Image (tube, rainbow, N blue to C red; front, side, top):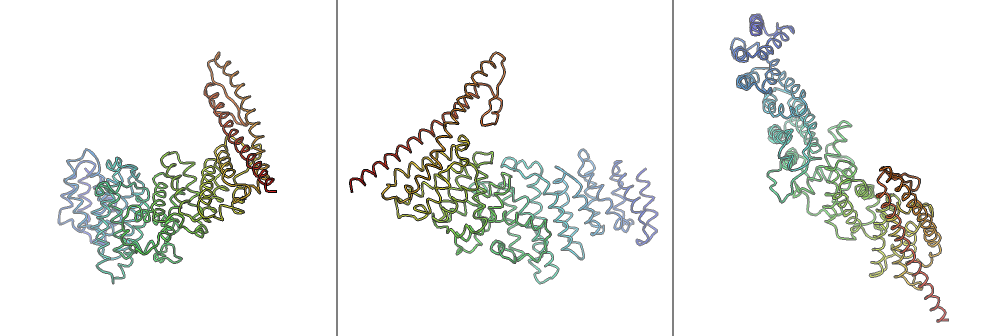
Length: 596
């Protein structure tokens, strides 16, 4: 029935001029052709398309059949029709209007979702390339439209997050990336071969946009194999190499992009990117920087005269962007890029003036977030190691400035304890080598004011702040032992009264209050435990105004005893510090009496 309908439409149109075809004829032709395919008459439809007498009709209306033919090719269980469908598809590509075909193919690419996205892209990339190359004009616009459509669909596919998933390539993203390179290559070569052609300047701009988009997705989140492994089997590394190669071929090599990015007027500002595209550009630049400096793709193009500190400055903006992201696959790249950048520097060589640049303070603050909020232990440890490496590279004034900043902003006892330990290390180095004015005398006393105090006095939550308090006590013990009252290199003995009032005395009061509170809670918990054992239930305990999460009585008792142990430990170190202070002041008094 559908075949007869189609033949009737064709007979009516055969006696008409192409200009006399009506919109109604196009709709009827498409509907009848689609029904022919659905009813299984693909072979008869192919004969109609192959008939030389129908050439004019197919040229004008045939593009309407592309959609039904492609959907038939993608359907499972219709292998018997596949050969005829492929023949018909090839004929339609040869006979139909390329402009109409272009729009039809792009509509088909936009239709699917999930795993079908890669299936239709892999099927249509070669035909799409052929159609674009047949266009008589506006090729740059058509290439840009095609690349934008393809990228939009590919960006919907999940990026494999491990080597295993990359090899499985369940959604076909890796295959699509490889095919997309082959699709784009002829247009890049066209730009290279015809540099004087003004139309090719527009084509170059479209290719530049596409390369930047590809750097963002999928390369920003893509995970790369270790370079010691077989890099030839890494599809994302191969894709990245090709994209960077395309950039170089169209006149934007790695040095030009990386060294110009931070300037007020960049070489690609003339593209007049939309706001969303401009935001994507920041991600693309971070991705490119990672590929160059961590993966080593194109790094040989950079001038060897660039100093390590200048390269670090170039990279810090991108490291900051990486660390602001919450996706593990992205912020972990920030850690890698920071490590590569810092390892180029000598210890103590990074001048304090760099901390006047926003990213040089925001990056260590980003590391603190990784250290305290990241659920993955290996990345938390990596964040800690990178913060220590960063500290090691700063000069003395830079270390001093960063310590003050992190003590004021971290709001985390463990991080503050880590910073206080670093302060102790710097003071120790100052004692052993030449006296360092930033970790002795007035400058050190100003820093100690941030260390040797309790934020809420005696009411401070000692358990929550135990890491900081222990580090502070250990620092104070070290200073008392190392610095004699007569020498007073650190200025400690001048400020001892203030330290006792702001830190030691409130700590004594806080310890007494906390221990009494927790001992009372242990007594209550033991009583509740006896009641609970008869009910075979669980109990709750309130500490510091907050209820400990419901847990078995034995576990709650263990938590409470652990808190008491912490208080005993703090009290033990506090007692030792006060004992040392007393011994030192008494010894100094006796020496002074002896001199008199």
